[in-house]
Image (cartoon, rainbow, N blue to C red; front, side, top):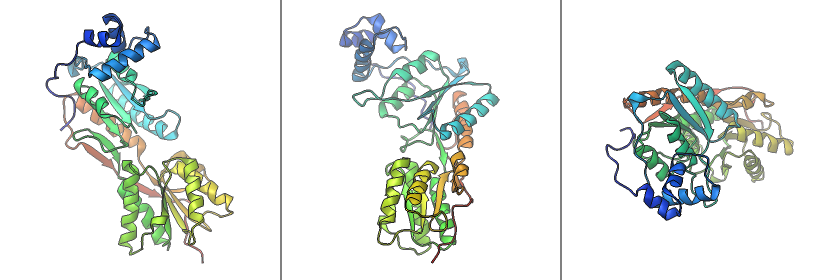
Amino acid sequence: MVRTGSASVAAGPTLAVVAREAGVSVPTASKVVNGREDVAPETRRRVTEALDRLGYVRRPRFDAAKSSGLVDLVVHSLETSWSGAVLHGVEAAAHDAGLEVVVSAGPNRTRGGRPERGWLDKLTARGSSGVLFNLAELTSSQYSWLDQHRIPYVLIDPVLEPPPGVVSVGAANWQGGVTATEHLLALGHERIAVVAGHQRKMCSSARVAGYRSALAAAGIRQRPEYIRHAGFDESAAHRRTLELLDLPEPPTAVFVCSDRMALGVYEALAERGLRVPDDISVVGFDDLPEARWTTPALTTVRQPLSEMAATALRLLVRMMEGDRPESTRTELSTRLVERASTAPPTG
């Protein structure tokens, strides 16, 4: 089932009630709801908090028959090669579909920790026909907002398990973890560590599960001390690697759950005077451009980011046309890209 909103929306507080709660006029509250910029920041904050507190819901405005030809792509960050690959895939598929794409970073959070409503309000004001979210960590209220406004949306590589019925596109992370570990096992490594991302995030937990499965299938004892979480942060991966090297029996190979973290692993190994792959083998995950630029070039599991993004756009177009995908979860295959960072263990 595709989440595009229920047939009817329960009546909620009126805009007049929201305005009274926030201590502003109805026209001022209306400006905030419609994403207008000519509102003082403090006034916007009071109105936004009142909207959230009272559960105010605007009337649905999406009409597939009157599609604007505009879709939004909301990315976690605009500064990474990951986002560049996603944008490339979305733009190519949108061009084929005759759509325009608006790109923004968000959603941000307020000082109190609540997600900002501004990007949602602007989305509605633009009249966008649908939304793609990349690496988004949406709240239940944001899911409800999208559903109540009947705006079709698709998640690209969601951070957490989406609610039932939400359409998402990702990679075969579990199989990728298996492939990376099997590659190291085939080279003769048995002391294989993993530097993982966030423990609670879908992709990270799936990659670690694949690593565990490959070791178990090979009859290799799993060592809890060989599993380190670095939150997809390069500096944290550097620290976790130093911890692994300080173990009484350090690993001879490391599966790193992102190419960016692998850069931190390389740095830590160089600090200790260890050579890749002569002293320790390293496998990454993603196949970002950074994987080819490292010395030695990084063996990694390729995640088809542009293809994932293009697939998500095509699914979104179907939903905008009133169609429902056969499955709410689409997974694209990963594959190993062998370069120069892995070799049989020495000694």
